[in-house]
Length: 301
Image (cartoon, rainbow, N blue to C red; front, side, top):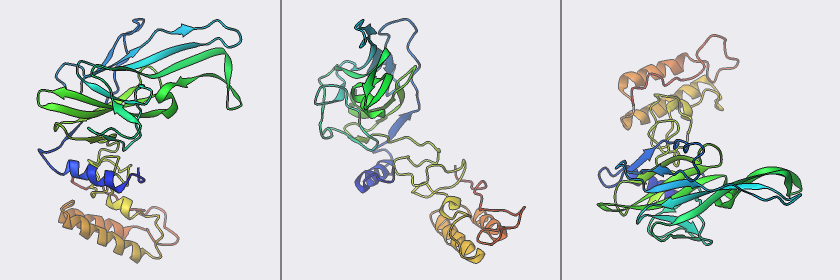
Protein backbone atom coordinates (compact mmCIF):
# COMPACT_ATOMS: atom_id res chain seq x y z
CA UNK A 1 0.00 0.00 0.00
CA UNK A 2 2.82 2.41 0.72
CA UNK A 3 4.08 1.83 -2.81
CA UNK A 4 0.92 3.32 -4.34
CA UNK A 5 1.86 6.13 -6.66
CA UNK A 6 1.39 9.68 -5.42
CA UNK A 7 -1.08 10.24 -8.24
CA UNK A 8 -3.39 7.52 -6.95
CA UNK A 9 -2.96 8.62 -3.33
CA UNK A 10 -3.82 12.25 -4.10
CA UNK A 11 -6.76 11.20 -6.25
CA UNK A 12 -8.16 8.99 -3.50
CA UNK A 13 -7.98 11.82 -1.01
CA UNK A 14 -9.62 14.24 -3.44
CA UNK A 15 -12.49 11.83 -4.05
CA UNK A 16 -13.27 11.72 -0.33
CA UNK A 17 -12.84 15.46 0.17
CA UNK A 18 -15.56 16.74 -2.17
CA UNK A 19 -18.95 16.07 -0.54
CA UNK A 20 -21.75 15.85 -3.05
CA UNK A 21 -19.30 15.55 -5.95
CA UNK A 22 -17.98 12.07 -5.34
CA UNK A 23 -18.78 9.27 -2.93
CA UNK A 24 -17.60 5.68 -2.94
CA UNK A 25 -20.31 3.29 -1.74
CA UNK A 26 -18.68 0.21 -0.22
CA UNK A 27 -20.36 -3.17 0.45
CA UNK A 28 -18.43 -5.49 2.78
CA UNK A 29 -19.61 -8.80 1.32
CA UNK A 30 -18.92 -11.62 0.86
CA UNK A 31 -21.60 -12.90 -1.48
CA UNK A 32 -23.62 -15.80 -0.07
CA UNK A 33 -22.73 -19.14 -1.65
CA UNK A 34 -24.86 -20.40 -4.54
CA UNK A 35 -27.61 -22.94 -3.83
CA UNK A 36 -26.13 -26.43 -3.48
CA UNK A 37 -26.49 -28.94 -6.32
CA UNK A 38 -27.88 -26.33 -8.75
CA UNK A 39 -25.45 -26.03 -11.64
CA UNK A 40 -25.09 -22.49 -12.94
CA UNK A 41 -27.11 -20.86 -10.16
CA UNK A 42 -26.15 -17.15 -10.31
CA UNK A 43 -24.57 -15.16 -7.51
CA UNK A 44 -25.79 -11.61 -8.22
CA UNK A 45 -24.05 -8.36 -7.25
CA UNK A 46 -26.39 -5.38 -6.83
CA UNK A 47 -24.10 -2.35 -6.56
CA UNK A 48 -26.69 0.38 -5.96
CA UNK A 49 -29.23 -1.64 -3.98
CA UNK A 50 -32.11 -1.11 -6.40
CA UNK A 51 -33.02 -4.80 -6.46
CA UNK A 52 -31.55 -5.34 -9.93
CA UNK A 53 -28.19 -7.09 -10.21
CA UNK A 54 -25.56 -5.49 -12.42
CA UNK A 55 -23.19 -8.49 -12.44
CA UNK A 56 -23.63 -12.22 -11.89
CA UNK A 57 -21.12 -14.95 -11.07
CA UNK A 58 -21.86 -18.48 -12.21
CA UNK A 59 -20.27 -21.92 -11.99
CA UNK A 60 -19.95 -24.10 -15.07
CA UNK A 61 -20.24 -27.87 -15.41
CA UNK A 62 -17.47 -29.96 -13.92
CA UNK A 63 -15.72 -31.83 -16.71
CA UNK A 64 -13.46 -34.84 -16.24
CA UNK A 65 -11.13 -36.67 -18.61
CA UNK A 66 -10.35 -40.36 -18.25
CA UNK A 67 -6.89 -40.32 -19.78
CA UNK A 68 -4.33 -42.13 -17.66
CA UNK A 69 -2.06 -40.81 -16.24
CA UNK A 70 -3.22 -37.29 -17.19
CA UNK A 71 -6.88 -37.57 -16.17
CA UNK A 72 -8.24 -34.62 -14.20
CA UNK A 73 -11.45 -32.72 -13.42
CA UNK A 74 -12.03 -29.00 -13.80
CA UNK A 75 -14.79 -26.61 -12.76
CA UNK A 76 -14.95 -23.20 -14.49
CA UNK A 77 -16.21 -19.95 -12.97
CA UNK A 78 -17.63 -17.09 -15.02
CA UNK A 79 -18.63 -13.47 -14.49
CA UNK A 80 -21.33 -11.85 -16.59
CA UNK A 81 -22.52 -8.28 -17.01
CA UNK A 82 -26.29 -7.96 -17.02
CA UNK A 83 -28.16 -5.98 -19.68
CA UNK A 84 -26.15 -3.01 -21.00
CA UNK A 85 -23.45 -3.22 -18.32
CA UNK A 86 -19.81 -3.94 -19.16
CA UNK A 87 -16.71 -5.61 -17.71
CA UNK A 88 -13.02 -4.90 -18.10
CA UNK A 89 -11.49 -7.77 -20.08
CA UNK A 90 -7.95 -8.61 -21.15
CA UNK A 91 -6.54 -9.19 -24.62
CA UNK A 92 -7.87 -12.74 -24.68
CA UNK A 93 -11.39 -11.53 -23.77
CA UNK A 94 -11.13 -13.14 -20.35
CA UNK A 95 -12.21 -11.13 -17.33
CA UNK A 96 -9.32 -8.83 -16.36
CA UNK A 97 -8.09 -9.00 -12.76
CA UNK A 98 -6.61 -5.67 -11.64
CA UNK A 99 -4.19 -5.03 -8.76
CA UNK A 100 -4.94 -2.80 -5.79
CA UNK A 101 -4.82 0.81 -6.98
CA UNK A 102 -5.72 0.02 -10.58
CA UNK A 103 -7.64 2.82 -12.31
CA UNK A 104 -11.20 2.04 -13.50
CA UNK A 105 -12.74 4.64 -15.79
CA UNK A 106 -13.67 5.43 -19.36
CA UNK A 107 -10.08 4.87 -20.51
CA UNK A 108 -9.25 1.25 -19.61
CA UNK A 109 -5.89 0.28 -18.04
CA UNK A 110 -3.07 -1.02 -20.22
CA UNK A 111 -3.78 -4.37 -21.90
CA UNK A 112 -7.48 -4.23 -21.04
CA UNK A 113 -10.62 -3.00 -22.77
CA UNK A 114 -14.30 -2.59 -22.02
CA UNK A 115 -16.37 -5.56 -23.09
CA UNK A 116 -19.49 -5.49 -25.19
CA UNK A 117 -22.73 -4.95 -23.19
CA UNK A 118 -23.94 -8.07 -21.41
CA UNK A 119 -20.57 -9.83 -21.81
CA UNK A 120 -19.98 -13.12 -19.94
CA UNK A 121 -16.33 -13.92 -19.40
CA UNK A 122 -14.10 -16.64 -18.00
CA UNK A 123 -12.63 -15.79 -14.60
CA UNK A 124 -10.94 -18.93 -13.29
CA UNK A 125 -11.23 -22.69 -12.99
CA UNK A 126 -10.36 -25.11 -10.21
CA UNK A 127 -8.84 -28.45 -11.12
CA UNK A 128 -7.87 -31.60 -9.31
CA UNK A 129 -6.28 -34.86 -10.37
CA UNK A 130 -5.74 -38.27 -8.87
CA UNK A 131 -2.36 -38.50 -10.59
CA UNK A 132 -1.35 -34.85 -10.34
CA UNK A 133 0.63 -32.70 -12.73
CA UNK A 134 4.28 -31.76 -12.86
CA UNK A 135 4.46 -27.98 -12.25
CA UNK A 136 7.79 -26.22 -11.69
CA UNK A 137 9.46 -29.50 -10.80
CA UNK A 138 6.84 -30.53 -8.20
CA UNK A 139 3.92 -32.95 -8.34
CA UNK A 140 0.73 -30.92 -7.77
CA UNK A 141 -2.71 -32.48 -7.34
CA UNK A 142 -4.96 -29.43 -7.48
CA UNK A 143 -4.87 -25.79 -8.44
CA UNK A 144 -6.45 -22.86 -10.25
CA UNK A 145 -6.12 -21.53 -13.77
CA UNK A 146 -7.26 -18.47 -15.71
CA UNK A 147 -6.80 -14.77 -14.88
CA UNK A 148 -7.74 -15.13 -11.22
CA UNK A 149 -5.71 -18.32 -10.91
CA UNK A 150 -2.61 -16.36 -11.95
CA UNK A 151 -3.33 -13.38 -9.69
CA UNK A 152 -4.69 -15.21 -6.64
CA UNK A 153 -6.67 -12.12 -5.61
CA UNK A 154 -7.57 -8.88 -7.34
CA UNK A 155 -10.29 -6.60 -8.64
CA UNK A 156 -12.75 -6.88 -11.52
CA UNK A 157 -13.69 -3.55 -13.13
CA UNK A 158 -17.35 -2.87 -13.87
CA UNK A 159 -19.23 -0.14 -15.75
CA UNK A 160 -22.96 -0.19 -15.11
CA UNK A 161 -25.73 2.12 -16.17
CA UNK A 162 -28.36 3.73 -13.95
CA UNK A 163 -30.97 6.41 -14.62
CA UNK A 164 -28.37 9.18 -14.07
CA UNK A 165 -25.70 7.68 -16.32
CA UNK A 166 -22.69 5.35 -16.24
CA UNK A 167 -21.10 4.36 -12.94
CA UNK A 168 -17.75 2.67 -12.35
CA UNK A 169 -17.13 0.04 -9.70
CA UNK A 170 -14.92 -2.81 -8.61
CA UNK A 171 -15.51 -6.30 -7.26
CA UNK A 172 -12.74 -7.92 -5.22
CA UNK A 173 -12.34 -11.61 -5.98
CA UNK A 174 -10.12 -14.29 -4.51
CA UNK A 175 -9.57 -18.02 -4.83
CA UNK A 176 -11.51 -20.28 -2.48
CA UNK A 177 -14.82 -21.86 -1.57
CA UNK A 178 -17.76 -21.41 -1.25
CA UNK A 179 -17.53 -17.99 -2.89
CA UNK A 180 -15.00 -16.08 -4.98
CA UNK A 181 -16.48 -12.64 -4.24
CA UNK A 182 -15.07 -10.84 -1.18
CA UNK A 183 -16.54 -7.30 -1.39
CA UNK A 184 -17.36 -4.54 -3.86
CA UNK A 185 -17.82 -0.78 -4.24
CA UNK A 186 -18.91 1.80 -6.79
CA UNK A 187 -18.66 5.52 -7.43
CA UNK A 188 -22.08 7.12 -6.83
CA UNK A 189 -21.27 10.15 -8.98
CA UNK A 190 -21.91 9.24 -12.65
CA UNK A 191 -19.04 9.26 -15.15
CA UNK A 192 -16.50 9.44 -12.30
CA UNK A 193 -13.57 6.94 -12.26
CA UNK A 194 -12.83 4.80 -9.24
CA UNK A 195 -9.63 3.20 -7.94
CA UNK A 196 -9.61 -0.55 -7.33
CA UNK A 197 -9.81 -0.92 -3.56
CA UNK A 198 -11.30 2.52 -2.86
CA UNK A 199 -13.59 2.26 0.15
CA UNK A 200 -11.82 -0.65 1.89
CA UNK A 201 -11.02 0.34 5.49
CA UNK A 202 -10.02 -2.69 7.54
CA UNK A 203 -9.28 -0.81 10.77
CA UNK A 204 -12.41 1.39 10.50
CA UNK A 205 -10.55 4.65 11.03
CA UNK A 206 -12.25 6.36 8.05
CA UNK A 207 -9.01 6.31 6.03
CA UNK A 208 -8.97 3.92 3.07
CA UNK A 209 -6.39 1.15 3.10
CA UNK A 210 -5.10 2.60 -0.17
CA UNK A 211 -3.62 5.60 1.63
CA UNK A 212 -3.54 4.35 5.23
CA UNK A 213 0.06 4.48 6.43
CA UNK A 214 -0.90 2.90 9.77
CA UNK A 215 -3.31 0.09 8.80
CA UNK A 216 -3.88 -1.44 12.25
CA UNK A 217 -5.09 1.52 14.31
CA UNK A 218 -6.76 0.40 17.57
CA UNK A 219 -10.51 0.95 17.69
CA UNK A 220 -11.59 4.45 18.71
CA UNK A 221 -8.22 6.16 18.17
CA UNK A 222 -8.21 9.60 16.56
CA UNK A 223 -6.14 9.56 13.39
CA UNK A 224 -4.64 12.11 11.02
CA UNK A 225 -5.12 12.20 7.23
CA UNK A 226 -2.57 9.36 6.88
CA UNK A 227 -4.60 7.09 9.19
CA UNK A 228 -2.10 7.25 12.05
CA UNK A 229 -2.92 7.76 15.72
CA UNK A 230 -0.69 9.50 18.27
CA UNK A 231 0.42 6.16 19.70
CA UNK A 232 1.40 4.91 16.25
CA UNK A 233 3.28 8.09 15.37
CA UNK A 234 5.14 8.10 18.68
CA UNK A 235 5.54 4.45 19.72
CA UNK A 236 6.86 3.73 23.18
CA UNK A 237 9.51 1.38 21.78
CA UNK A 238 10.86 3.98 19.35
CA UNK A 239 14.53 4.96 19.24
CA UNK A 240 14.27 7.47 22.11
CA UNK A 241 17.50 8.60 23.73
CA UNK A 242 15.66 9.65 26.86
CA UNK A 243 12.24 9.86 28.44
CA UNK A 244 12.29 13.61 27.90
CA UNK A 245 12.77 13.19 24.15
CA UNK A 246 9.79 10.82 24.03
CA UNK A 247 7.52 13.19 25.96
CA UNK A 248 8.62 16.16 23.82
CA UNK A 249 7.76 14.25 20.63
CA UNK A 250 4.34 13.30 22.03
CA UNK A 251 3.73 16.96 22.88
CA UNK A 252 4.55 18.07 19.32
CA UNK A 253 2.18 15.49 17.81
CA UNK A 254 -0.55 16.47 20.29
CA UNK A 255 -0.21 20.11 19.22
CA UNK A 256 -0.65 19.10 15.59
CA UNK A 257 -3.71 16.95 16.40
CA UNK A 258 -5.21 19.87 18.35
CA UNK A 259 -4.50 22.26 15.48
CA UNK A 260 -6.37 19.96 13.12
CA UNK A 261 -9.29 19.61 15.53
CA UNK A 262 -8.78 15.86 15.96
CA UNK A 263 -8.73 15.88 19.77
CA UNK A 264 -10.04 18.19 22.46
CA UNK A 265 -7.96 20.19 24.89
CA UNK A 266 -8.98 17.90 27.74
CA UNK A 267 -7.90 14.83 25.81
CA UNK A 268 -4.62 16.49 24.84
CA UNK A 269 -3.81 17.14 28.49
CA UNK A 270 -4.80 13.60 29.50
CA UNK A 271 -2.63 12.01 26.80
CA UNK A 272 0.34 14.18 27.78
CA UNK A 273 -0.06 13.16 31.45
CA UNK A 274 -0.02 9.47 30.45
CA UNK A 275 3.14 10.06 28.40
CA UNK A 276 4.84 11.86 31.30
CA UNK A 277 4.01 9.01 33.72
CA UNK A 278 5.17 6.30 31.32
CA UNK A 279 8.54 4.55 31.26
CA UNK A 280 8.97 5.15 27.52
CA UNK A 281 12.54 6.20 26.77
CA UNK A 282 13.76 5.12 30.21
CA UNK A 283 16.33 2.33 30.65
CA UNK A 284 15.49 -0.04 32.17
CA UNK A 285 11.69 0.26 32.44
CA UNK A 286 10.19 -0.38 35.83
CA UNK A 287 7.62 -3.20 36.01
CA UNK A 288 4.04 -2.11 36.59
CA UNK A 289 4.32 1.33 34.96
CA UNK A 290 2.49 2.53 31.85
CA UNK A 291 4.53 1.61 28.80
CA UNK A 292 2.97 3.73 26.09
CA UNK A 293 0.45 6.41 25.24
CA UNK A 294 -3.02 4.97 24.94
CA UNK A 295 -5.51 6.69 22.71
CA UNK A 296 -8.58 4.90 24.05
CA UNK A 297 -9.93 8.19 25.40
CA UNK A 298 -9.88 9.89 22.02
CA UNK A 299 -13.45 11.05 21.37
CA UNK A 300 -13.24 11.13 17.57
CA UNK A 301 -15.57 8.55 16.03
